[in-house]
Length: 255
Image (cartoon, rainbow, N blue to C red; front, side, top):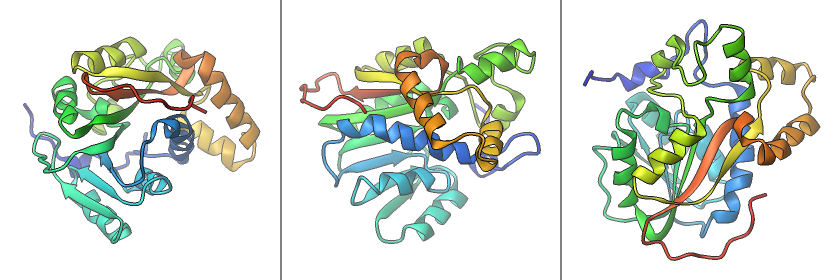
């Protein structure tokens, strides 16, 4: 297996940024869907954190976080950003070991970067408490914007990994069936799954339209509502997972 330079993979390129303002919108609506499944405020692990933007949003729900980040440069920045409430571990998932388990584990827009997704997902089962939950989200291969790009000839097919995505460490692009298959192959019970925000535009187009006031909060809310009935057109897919020995707990319906 080729050695990976995690500090290089997150760098921006001329034709594609690593992160867009729209990503924060996705995370906001994702957390609205996931929050009804949270069980307490004191036991959360985030797997992969980039610059800590998702970490910051999670800290609205949790008193403290443990974070694993393979890119040492990013890990150092997140330590400096959250000196009191976040413990940052610099390691790959294969290298990580814990003496404790967590009630909530978050793998957000990271599974598509993993060389051995099913193997790593199996490893994460041991990081969950008996009734803990793994929250996973991935970019959707069949997002409306991606289907449009395929019809325009900009992408070879829906599940293709573009050269720019490959530079940023993507190993695959998940459709809903493959996403759920990998979770089941890793031995999880899937408690909830769906899509986040129907997505008619590329990320950079969303950023430009939001900056000009063309896309409003009401428009985004409508895209959020439509994703409930049209997950196949959404920007991201999500799943709430439990260990196979998980004892069912009552929870509210996702917002």
